[in-house]
Image (cartoon, rainbow, N blue to C red; front, side):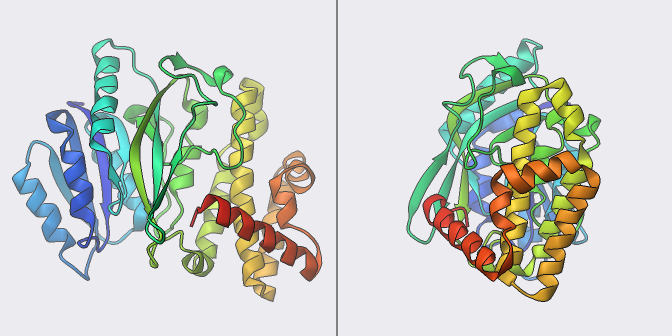
Amino acid sequence: MDKIITFAVPCYNSAAYMEHCVDTLLQGGDDIEIILVDDGSTQDNTAEICDRYAAQYPDIVRAIHQENGGHGEGVNQGLRNARGVYYKVVDSDDWVDVPALRTALEKLRQFVRDEKLVDLLLCNYVYEHVADNTQRVNHFRKLLPVGRVFGWDAVAKFRPDQFIMMHNVIYRTQLLRDCGLELPKHTFYVDSIFVYEPLPYVKNMYYLDVDLYRYFIGREDQSVNEQVMLRRIDQQLRVNYHMLDSHDLNEVSAKSKPLGAYMFNYLAIMVTVSSIFLDMDGSEEAMEKRKKLWDYIRERDVGLYRKMRYFSLPAFTYLPGKAGRKLSLAMYRVARKIYKFN
């Protein structure tokens, strides 16, 4: 490892916006590595842009070209090749705030210099809404200690709108490798796996209260666009099943109740999203998929099923009959208007 941090930037037909992303990252200087993963782009000159940056900044930027494998395989490829002590994914249509980047890098340098590495550095991210030109900061000021290293016992209870996202996290690279993280190919929404699966391996953390990541949202072809999510519901379900299979939350909770509670809530949100979009579809096939998901949860862990079915947010997405589905969707619309998550 010869860099403080590796930024992996999966790129797929990203020529229209990727340069803004890369230009902000380059402000981090020689201590950083940027891996541009061209995921088989065919519709524009993404590959040429990647090669141009690699030629112009040979000590910082590397370009990797691969057959199309989806966003997850872009993340995997970056991790396989990373030379940084820490690892962060930045989507090609997003960017970082340069002053916040410099602050984060100085903290990471301190960890490396003092030989006291933390497993996870958390920063804030900002929703940049293109439709109405508004912003919303996702922060943890009332949930996590600021300015010191801490463990799961110091984490407060998260609200449903206060989840750790890929945009918040900077993981220690070796931790991701040690936990065997491998995201599924040709699958959207793997960001949740990237955050969720390594969590039980995290022993210490640091929260830096700076607005580092700028998350662009509102483009019509974006993966979190509502109509796009409806078309890709099978991929969302694939992520659900992967997360359900990755950990036994009873074992996690036995080691750390706060971590177990957080991971349950994270999983519950994912089940809620899938159930809502299957309700939105409303077809007989969609209702069968919803039943299959809930049956799988029950078969895997009856206690988990009962808690989700009767005592947490997913309960409101599995209400009986057309009237129940109508109520579930109405609640979703209200939440969407308030939180602007897609």
